[in-house]
Image (cartoon, rainbow, N blue to C red; front, side, top):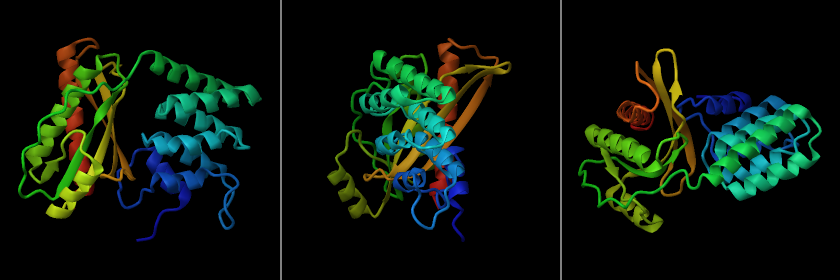
Length: 284
């Protein structure tokens, strides 16, 4: 099957399409953002714009450096997209703020300067609020799944809601672990497992490893009810090379923001569906 064009490829990633065979890795996306493009590749600002947004969706520390370099792009639309992507990414805050401040000092286009300012304010607010993904105590060794085919490590949850991070993490991870156990062919990795131990397990049991980096977006009050989105960046494990982003949303009719029971019910349902999408995409 022919590989999609660079423009279509990064557009798919930015939109959260879950096609594991079509999506590029972080270095491949970063190469599409680079200016000037290498010989043989057309100079298309749309490719660089889409690549910037795609990097912002990866949840990877490795996306920060290429995005910071993208702030020097000659096209204002690309620079604005880079600022939006850095805001969404929210990684390596000290480095990200430094490159945004440097851009703000020299930026002459007001629309770009506005996006840079918004990104800095958002990242500064995250930093002042403290860690957004508090860790819970390590769980005991997960039960052995003798017929497992896939080895899965779950990240701590990046919490972008106004709820307590530990509570959000518990609701999301409990639901995801339960769904993985229900599917029956997934072996969960212990929390905090070393790379060497993971490699040994994969080799000994002949499993394929995946790492799920999980983020929860703010709750939204809609005319129908309460809505939330859970994003999962699927990577190899233990190498953590990005394979695909998965985004799943859900609405609980009649529910109101601040109703903890309803919020937990919604989080569990949406997180569980994220596992279903992962299973459909990667369990061949």
